[in-house]
Image (cartoon, rainbow, N blue to C red; front, side, top):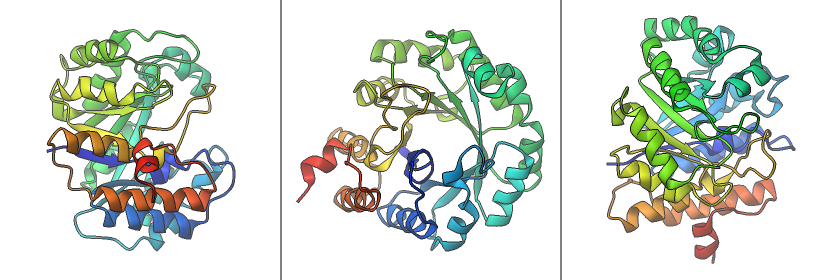
Amino acid sequence: MITLYEMGARDGLQNEPVMVPAAVKAELIDRLAQCGLQHIEAGSFVSPRWIPQMADSEAVFGLIKRQAGVTYSALTPNMQGFERAMAAGADEVAVFAAASEAFSQKNINCSIRESIQRFTQVCEAARDKNIPVRGYVSTVMGCPYQGKVPEADVVMAIEELLALGCYQVSLGDTIGVGTPRQVSQVLKTCLSVASPAQLAMHFHDTYGQALANLLSGLELDITTIDASVAGLGGCPYAKGASGNVATEDVIYMLHGMGMDTGVDLPQLVAVSHWICGQLECQNRAKVAQAMET
């Protein structure tokens, strides 16, 4: 069974230049849940100064029409964010770090290990409340500042996050530079310190490699995939970087391989076109373009 984490409402929208109303975000989340997606990242409780688009995450959580069996999660970088997420009713929280020392120093002025240790209090508070914590590690396949990222740094980040209590670590190809053989090698190394169930794949599609890279992970029995409806999103640190791999494209591939996702693809395509209409943007999902009526 494949597990999909839908990133469109958070990772997909956070870099949109025009503010998206909370009601539209909430409706997107509701429509995604109706398609059969059971893990939806619904918001980010970071400082509004850093990500203005996510400043209304409390309002979004308040507007969601919650569906049974669906987990609504949120990104929480610190205790203030965690407390806001709890007050809003998040079912799960996520913390994030980078595998690149240069990326970590450039963005938060500390080392990888130091950045992860900052989440200790969040993870302890989550454990006390029986709230699951998921970890993200970005720049796993390459960094816009330092280029290649040592596998040892990726492994260290995974070990640190698991030690803090993260049930799973999602490995991000943030700028989409990875290729299948590289991905296979990096993931094999990661599997030396984590089980397949403790790892997820979060691949951006900048160079059109994401589906092939996901297949490399599936062949290693890693069956948790992050994706974004309509391929929404991008990376502000990499010129031309596209969003996370499109959920529709992933599901089409998986269904074609005989794998069960529990997601209604035609219904998801309709949602994809709807949100692109709301944003007045081009739909990046190849499958959505092909199935457009």
